[in-house]
Length: 359
Image (cartoon, rainbow, N blue to C red; front, side):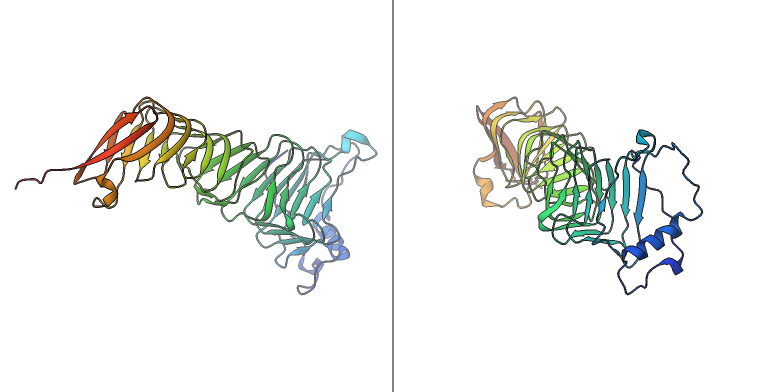
């Protein structure tokens, strides 16, 4: 199904309901007649690839009694059956449903791009039933009233979150193999989701404030940054030019930069690839199993060289087993020189004060 939505013609002003009154079903029918007047007639046995719907009226569209978009099998069979529904909820649109804000019967896939708001008064903001492979792009607000904002149902679904994308309520990927993609050069925040098997951070700096526990394999791509303030299941890879910091993750494979902070915890294995960087600023890393260092660089960044903690050995990595050593050490230190020591389960640093330079 296409993932671009053509702009629907704007109905003439005389066909629109009064600005101060919500649209009723007759108003909507009149407006749609204005949209489709002059369009070519559908011939017998014509084939449809999708239906495109654009919600962009400035006052907003209240679809309390028409929240479900249903494509039933037509009498003529496959020749005229719908293969997909495309919905663009524009920045000026407020879509409200008496139960769910927007619901699909699941007979065909749905592609939804939201820049405005979609609200369910007594249910989910968006509920997509069935076993279809749906896609939702959210740069606006999806809000549910009973704790559930987005229910993707069955199928292998994709959720793409943009800067400004918000969810009031939980996000449930449902059954199937589902993906969440954080993709915006301006970055943003994401509160986590259940039943998402893949977490991809494509561009920008993103802060994860809720768990993605069902993740099996995810990546932070080159140029992107993930600040994990929660928990990620499975394995995450950090590509060259990418940065990961904080939070709990089951396995972490780093070819870019791992920035340590107080919340950093790797439940199983850490693998630092050759050419990668581990950035240390007095916050040690706990690794549940093996830390593979594989010739990575240790970058030590200390703001206060008179910090009393620097007078004693400090733990950099606390693991069940240490495999390999750092290939080199860089730092911003001017009065101190770091020296590393290794044990079977740890890496430590000791700082020695430099001798004063004789003028």
